[in-house]
Amino acid sequence: MEQISVVSKLTKACLNVRGEDRPSTKEVAMELEGLILRGKHSWECINVYYEEKMESLIPIDDAMSRSGVTQVSDMTASPHITIHKPKLDNMQASILVMIIFTLPTLVLSSQNFPLSKENCDDSCGDIRIPFPFGTTKECYLAIQFWVTCNRTTTPPKLFWWNTTIPIIDISLEGQITLLQRIAKDCYHLNASSSLSIDTRIELTTSFTVNYTANRFTIVGCDAYALVSGNRLDRTFMTGCTAMCSSRDDLTEGSCAGVGCCQTPIPQNVTTVGIRVNSYSNYTDVSDFNTCGYAFVVKDSAFNFSKDNLTNLLDVTRLPAVIDWAIGNGTCEQAERNADSYACVSANSQCYKPTNGYGYRCRCKDRFEGNPYLPKGCRDINECLNESLHNCNKHALCTNEIGNYTCTCPDNYDGDGMGVDGCREKPPKDTKITFVLIGKYYWFVL
Image (cartoon, rainbow, N blue to C red; front, side, top):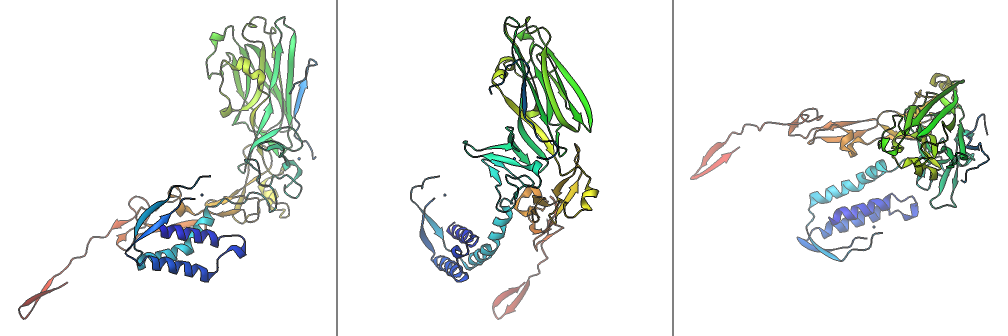
């Protein structure tokens, strides 16, 4: 429909950030007037074209060699189309005038919200960098939220602090997904060690290893591994054993101890060290397995395969999920210090994470965005998405700040909510009166 197309272009122009590029009210009016005049012809031909990174403990990426072996680590224009369109009546013209004023609100309410501070990088390649994280001192909340973006690569790569730990995702829900090194233990056929690598990561108290999304995993047929570290100022140690006598013993997707073993990560872990060892240097299984591997991995990112006995030798890192929070105090403690309180958006609230120290912020119900920015939480227009409101199909959905209302049409009764929210009113009784005037009959309703 040409009218909607013209209105859309006008709306886009009216939303231009550069004031000099926005049309004046008079120009908008003239354009609409022309559109209405064109609509007065009963039929017209329209030519259509489609054109369109140090404080306290810091993140430490440590790959340690035990045997003197180090790890080497547009759419083109469519053909011309001629379409015949019916005329634009006065009612349609009125609707267009209404659309030109309401459409900007719809466009603005559905656009992406700013995630970073003003004049700060909000992404590195396709990876978002939401505040409190940032690439410069002016852009992050505290030093532990410093990330660096290497733009000399294609695509650009994001790293945690000044380490070589790659980050592949940062979420405002309090998680970072990074690529953590794999511990390895390999032997030659003569049972001499060929490669032995331990891995370790240390975190500040603002960060903890996620205990629900990750699993400590070991792969091999003559392997056992230990994972140790600190949790709540205490030490912990756990481990796993993976054994098998034949490749045929292995089951795809199973990590129950035959060739692959998994165990949960304890809660509130801030330091993780991993070491993998062999019982007999793989001498009994050397025809199909000469290495053992151990790592903390995001559960959904790893599915055991028989081929992992060999192909993990060429893999350096796997995804792991780290939880983050603000400071090391509670919400009550944080709220008493307005100068450092991080939940600065008017429509944000503080909550205690289930893992680690500190607190987090989130937008209140029916708001979305970044609660760590002054105007970061904005109203959700539920009316733009049917899955977000419960208005009846006949009802008018009206967005309000932090809520919405449903109103039935005049010829319907009900509260406008749900399947039965609008019920059609029964027709009124109609009386017909016949009037005789001369030799003609007239009827009056």
